[in-house]
Image (cartoon, rainbow, N blue to C red):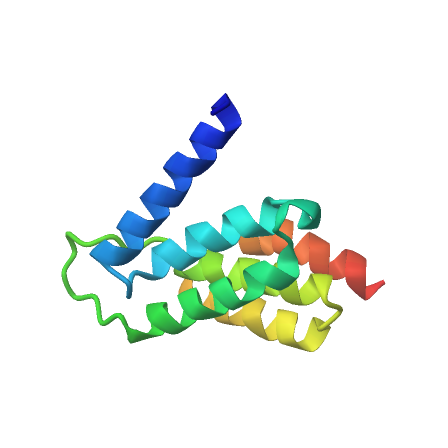
Length: 126
Protein backbone atom coordinates (compact mmCIF):
# COMPACT_ATOMS: atom_id res chain seq x y z
CA UNK A 1 0.00 0.00 0.00
CA UNK A 2 1.43 3.36 -0.96
CA UNK A 3 1.47 6.37 1.36
CA UNK A 4 -1.67 7.99 -0.12
CA UNK A 5 -3.70 4.80 0.17
CA UNK A 6 -2.59 4.50 3.79
CA UNK A 7 -3.70 8.06 4.52
CA UNK A 8 -7.06 7.51 2.84
CA UNK A 9 -7.61 4.32 4.84
CA UNK A 10 -6.76 6.14 8.08
CA UNK A 11 -9.17 8.96 7.26
CA UNK A 12 -11.96 6.50 6.49
CA UNK A 13 -11.35 4.68 9.77
CA UNK A 14 -11.38 7.96 11.70
CA UNK A 15 -14.64 9.01 10.01
CA UNK A 16 -16.32 5.71 10.84
CA UNK A 17 -15.17 5.94 14.46
CA UNK A 18 -16.32 9.55 14.84
CA UNK A 19 -19.74 8.79 13.38
CA UNK A 20 -20.18 5.75 15.66
CA UNK A 21 -19.18 7.75 18.75
CA UNK A 22 -21.82 10.42 18.13
CA UNK A 23 -23.92 10.23 14.96
CA UNK A 24 -25.73 13.43 15.99
CA UNK A 25 -22.58 15.55 16.19
CA UNK A 26 -23.05 18.39 13.68
CA UNK A 27 -19.30 18.97 13.53
CA UNK A 28 -18.77 15.53 11.99
CA UNK A 29 -20.94 16.53 9.02
CA UNK A 30 -19.37 20.00 8.89
CA UNK A 31 -15.81 18.66 8.70
CA UNK A 32 -16.77 15.91 6.23
CA UNK A 33 -18.58 18.53 4.16
CA UNK A 34 -15.54 20.81 4.10
CA UNK A 35 -13.32 17.93 2.98
CA UNK A 36 -15.84 17.01 0.27
CA UNK A 37 -16.26 20.64 -0.82
CA UNK A 38 -12.54 21.08 -1.45
CA UNK A 39 -12.03 17.66 -3.05
CA UNK A 40 -12.16 17.93 -6.86
CA UNK A 41 -15.19 16.33 -8.50
CA UNK A 42 -12.88 13.97 -10.40
CA UNK A 43 -11.88 12.52 -7.02
CA UNK A 44 -15.38 12.22 -5.56
CA UNK A 45 -15.91 15.69 -4.17
CA UNK A 46 -17.41 19.02 -5.08
CA UNK A 47 -20.04 21.45 -3.88
CA UNK A 48 -22.98 19.35 -5.05
CA UNK A 49 -21.86 16.40 -2.92
CA UNK A 50 -20.92 18.59 0.03
CA UNK A 51 -24.23 20.46 0.21
CA UNK A 52 -26.26 17.62 1.82
CA UNK A 53 -23.55 17.27 4.47
CA UNK A 54 -23.79 20.98 5.33
CA UNK A 55 -27.59 20.74 5.37
CA UNK A 56 -27.34 17.85 7.85
CA UNK A 57 -24.87 19.84 9.96
CA UNK A 58 -27.20 22.86 10.06
CA UNK A 59 -30.11 20.59 10.99
CA UNK A 60 -28.19 18.95 13.83
CA UNK A 61 -26.90 22.29 15.14
CA UNK A 62 -30.52 23.47 15.38
CA UNK A 63 -31.29 20.58 17.75
CA UNK A 64 -28.54 21.46 20.23
CA UNK A 65 -29.73 23.18 23.37
CA UNK A 66 -26.29 23.95 24.78
CA UNK A 67 -26.43 25.40 28.26
CA UNK A 68 -23.20 23.72 29.39
CA UNK A 69 -20.35 26.18 28.88
CA UNK A 70 -17.80 23.35 28.92
CA UNK A 71 -19.14 21.92 25.67
CA UNK A 72 -17.88 23.17 22.30
CA UNK A 73 -19.94 25.81 20.56
CA UNK A 74 -17.99 26.32 17.34
CA UNK A 75 -19.05 25.57 13.79
CA UNK A 76 -22.68 26.59 13.49
CA UNK A 77 -22.15 29.77 11.47
CA UNK A 78 -19.47 27.96 9.45
CA UNK A 79 -21.99 25.32 8.42
CA UNK A 80 -24.26 28.08 7.13
CA UNK A 81 -21.32 29.71 5.35
CA UNK A 82 -20.32 26.54 3.54
CA UNK A 83 -23.96 25.80 2.73
CA UNK A 84 -24.11 29.28 1.18
CA UNK A 85 -20.97 28.57 -0.86
CA UNK A 86 -22.60 25.41 -2.24
CA UNK A 87 -25.74 27.37 -3.08
CA UNK A 88 -23.65 30.09 -4.74
CA UNK A 89 -21.88 27.43 -6.79
CA UNK A 90 -25.28 26.10 -7.90
CA UNK A 91 -26.48 29.61 -8.82
CA UNK A 92 -29.10 29.64 -6.04
CA UNK A 93 -28.41 33.16 -4.86
CA UNK A 94 -31.60 33.79 -2.84
CA UNK A 95 -30.98 30.59 -0.86
CA UNK A 96 -27.31 31.54 -0.41
CA UNK A 97 -28.29 34.97 0.93
CA UNK A 98 -30.71 33.34 3.39
CA UNK A 99 -27.99 30.96 4.59
CA UNK A 100 -25.50 33.81 5.01
CA UNK A 101 -28.07 35.81 6.97
CA UNK A 102 -28.80 32.87 9.30
CA UNK A 103 -25.10 32.43 9.94
CA UNK A 104 -24.72 36.13 10.72
CA UNK A 105 -27.51 35.92 13.29
CA UNK A 106 -25.40 33.32 15.10
CA UNK A 107 -22.15 35.28 14.77
CA UNK A 108 -22.43 38.80 13.33
CA UNK A 109 -18.64 39.17 13.51
CA UNK A 110 -17.82 36.09 11.44
CA UNK A 111 -15.04 37.14 9.09
CA UNK A 112 -15.65 33.92 7.13
CA UNK A 113 -19.20 35.03 6.34
CA UNK A 114 -18.60 38.77 5.97
CA UNK A 115 -15.41 38.29 3.97
CA UNK A 116 -14.95 35.05 2.08
CA UNK A 117 -18.58 33.98 1.59
CA UNK A 118 -19.87 37.48 0.85
CA UNK A 119 -17.11 37.99 -1.72
CA UNK A 120 -18.09 34.76 -3.49
CA UNK A 121 -21.74 35.84 -3.37
CA UNK A 122 -21.01 39.31 -4.75
CA UNK A 123 -18.88 37.90 -7.58
CA UNK A 124 -21.60 35.46 -8.63
CA UNK A 125 -24.30 38.16 -8.39
CA UNK A 126 -22.52 40.37 -10.98
